[in-house]
Length: 120
Image 1 (spheres, one colour):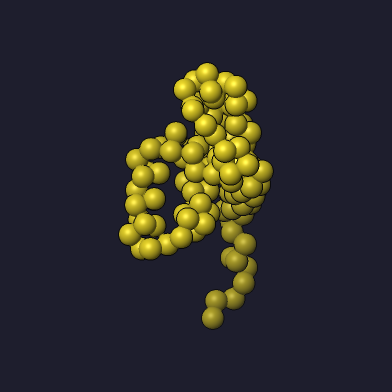
Image 2 (cartoon, one colour):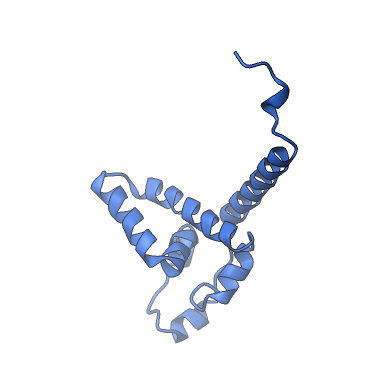
């Protein structure tokens, strides 16, 4: 993994630290404008890096939703992301969002969950 990164021009990568930020890097690779806007917004509000790091998941899940929830294919198709593993947390979030979307779609098809309840 890192031999390829070095060959591609990276001078040094702190592997243990980078693994906590792979999803932030992925957002930057896939949508640089959104990534910069998110970072700027968090900086202006004086938020810490941890809060920004957590916020980077949501846009990636939205990108995955638009591409059929296949986060692995998204990573593998991008030349700068193909060398990284998909973070487990990102994979879990995509899975739960896909389940929620499927549940919402099936309940709206069946007429909605709350239609038989009295309205107060």
